[in-house]
Length: 375
Image (cartoon, rainbow, N blue to C red; front, side):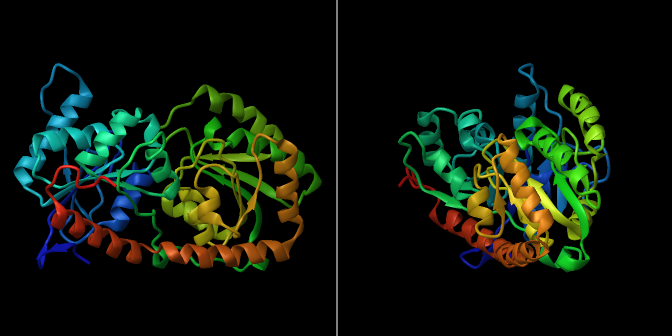
């Protein structure tokens, strides 16, 4: 699928944030999504990875451009240099309102799409309502969920904000085991930080595993993406707690290995304390057929619907009760796993890629025009 406007294929340049690395051993969730949704002829630009970048999508490293004002400005100038040299029909910027506005100022006639993966109210150049109002008038704003969209429009902001959900490549998922054949494994996947509720997961497992000796628990993840991760104070404090609870800390794992483990695990737990902007781990768990337990925060209820159980990670009795109900009821696990797979089918990347291509074409057809993207 190739985005078209007026019958001509669009040349799309997708810009990652400076901390993203577009390589198999270094890529985070946003980079994986960009690769999954890439259109024919698209070019991804970003910070040079330490290892070889993905080979199935064209990649250009952002050049080092001198600026005495620091790395953020150097990165912007480097991206602008690639835009000037590549002359794309549309630039898609991920998660960086300040960079999208900079490119809009430098290239006012160039269509700019800003994809928001996180709460914009915490982002540079989007924290205040007036800043978000300006963004809505300057660039085409796209949110990965209705929750993110509503956060952008909070405090009286008016604007036309589209929603393009994250996606899965269903054809690339490992075969999901039937519920009866799945390992009695409680699985946590993601960044091992307080916001994600890793400590709540360990505390629940400390209470449950002694009562259910045929079950085990595992955490896949570290403080950040990639193999070069830090030993944070949170991780340092969690390690002895996890060891005492019988929870294995596997550290960073490649995405393929994570999905393979999800396809075997009976239960995946997503006990996020913060408002999940989308909930990619939950979507992957549903796609892999695991029974899912999530917190009621952020976009998780919208994403999982009736295909999950819910528990507050800050209420340990509630979390323990919900988890134990899943551990004790194989039929419930089977029903949730099947419902999750059906729900995940809505987010197949082939469908989302076509929607993204049409969105790009609509933006190019409508550009330019002051206030064009206002409600």
